Length: 249
Ligand code: IPE
Ligand code: IPE
Ligand code: MG
Image (cartoon, rainbow, N blue to C red; front, side, top):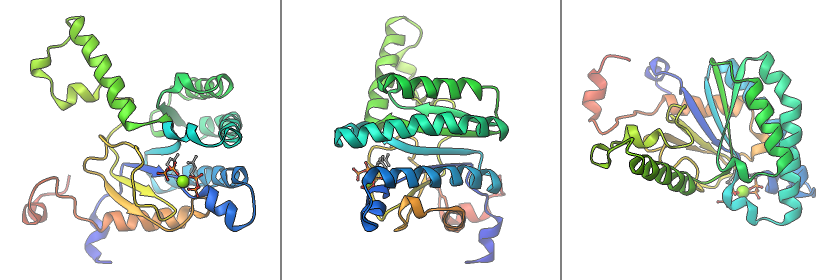
């Protein structure tokens, strides 16, 4: 790696597509829910690692809107695990001053999981230094639809004019209105697709794909991903020469 990479900033916001729990379990002859349980351990570790490495915003893809199409028994196990995770982790989040957010169609989650989520969100609402966002029943396309509906309503109510619409206005209606765009998106398990995660917000994100399965992903792997990110040149439409002469932000 070039010495130059050390001068480039860390990502402010990392998004993670936590994939590979099922394959991790299969390789060991375990059930898929057992893989998700191990995945939850990796999730805990990554939240800690982000804090240790100074990453203020972490967004984790935990359950997609398409994941409802899995067998009922797996969906049930995932929802129970979510509830357990929230009930167990809230104290730690408070202790570490991490604010919890959720993105997705949260009102469609089972009651118990939704209540545990609300409780954790409320209990951490005062914090601002560290932000953990769980994408649950999340789909970028649903997010855009929901934003378009809210936007149309604001026009009907005379609160906004469609003629002056810009991205700043529109993005206020996305679930992520309070969050900066992700700088780095990591996907584990060797799949190189985005699976409906933060499509709009990742317009200028860097992508990092690793073969590591989610339960095996830890601080060391996160550091590798960050080192790779810091070695990239983000141009935002400009030329490499412009970027080279630009004074650091
Ligand atoms: C990711 O692991 C967890 C969720 C999608 C909820 P998977 O369950 O997708 O694991 P694989 O892809 O089957 O290995
Ligand atoms: C994406 O993983 C969703 C989560 C990690 C929660 P999937 O395993 O559901 O994605 P596909 O179906 O392989 O694209
Ligand atoms: Mg998968």
